[in-house]
Length: 185
Image: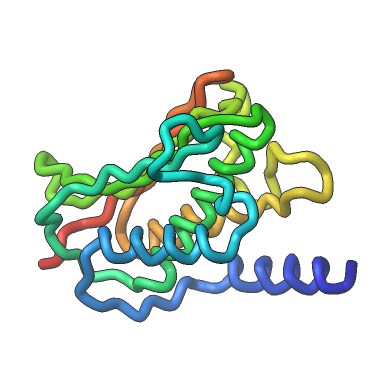
């Protein structure tokens, strides 16, 4: 219990501080690959996902654009964005006992930005809660399962990169979170 309280306090402290970026030129595909590898090797929920067995109850699909332009960003913080989004998506599908988790990247040429996304076929978010999910302390998870800080940290990280974030969800159909980062100047 003390460890959980300390983690929450540390996260609150980080959330209240300006995000310190250690920007470098990077391809978002590389960050995504690193985050997926980390998650499949270490996180029990994600270990159940199969990328090569279409009959598996939990499937992981990757949709990465080739020749993606580079962005100036902090790779560790963007990896944490993907990790938080992947964990939320996996949790939404665990309730159902099956589903597809899709992660990816694409170019948005109209606005000169790169898009990263995580999509699930989980339980979805009720319409009346969608506007609240990025607020600190808000969670749709059962008591003891979430701090309500993950998506707030995702939003602050993306905004610190001069990016933007969007969420689409439908109950019983799933959720898609997209974040957009400006192209490297």
